[in-house]
Every structure is written in structure tokens, then in C-alpha cells.
Image: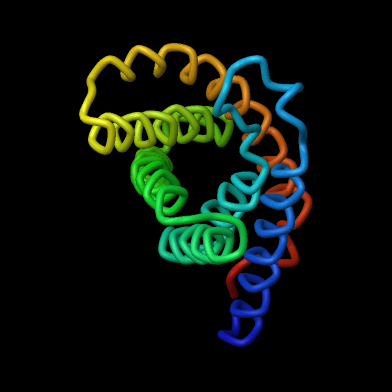
Length: 168
């Protein structure tokens, strides 16, 4: 794929991830019985980029999204939690994709759980308490559910947009 075309696709992916993050922020907490739970809509784009481009591209899109969302809607704490979750999640997903024994849905589920684990680890560090680690049990369950949905949507996009984004 030509460099200009690839940059354009990744720019579009970053923009879509930003829009999805904004849409997710508009969903009232009443739909989430447990505090801190999000559906992870922007991760559909990250999973798509991971499977259609290179791991480096998924990292760049993810970090750009986090940085822009933090500048627009967040603060230093938002950045700390987002980066810690994204780094652990992306590392696990990149490794599992390379090992090639899980489907895109399986990789997405592990990514969602690792994202929650990264955020809990950051909370344990920032709050100087290990007890918050128990919350990971709840987050792992909800993360697995959202990981399945993100993986399904990401998988559909990977199949449907195969001809448009394949590297030449």
C-alpha cells in the first residue's frame, strides 16, 4: 500500500476511534450498573487496524486517540489510566495475534481483560492500595463480554474491508 494511502486510512481510523470515544462518553451511566465500565467502542478500530495493518500502526492510532481524547475531555489521571490499559492490552493482543492460535474474538477478549488489568494496576499504584485489585474480577467479566462484541465487530470490518485496505 502506498504511504500516502496508508496515512489517509490510518487518519480515518483515528478519527473514527475519536468519534466512537465521544459517542461512548455520551452513554449515560444508567446503562452500566457497575462504575467504571465502558463498552470499549474505540477498540473496534484498534482491533481492525491491528489485523489490517501492522502492530506499529495499531499502537500509533491507539496512542493518538488517547492523547487527543485526553486533551479534549480528560486530565492527567485519564491519561494515566488510559495509557496503562492500552499498553498492556496492545502488548497482549500483538503477542496473541503473532502466535496465531486465537481468533480475532479471542484476541479482543484477552485485550479487553488486559486493558482492565492495566487500569487496576495503575489504580493500585496511584491509590497505594492492593484491595482495589478485587474489582478486577467484576471488570474481567464485563471486559470479556465487551471483548466479544468488539471482536465480532472488528472481525466483520476486517472481512468487509479486505480489498480496500490490503497491503500491496
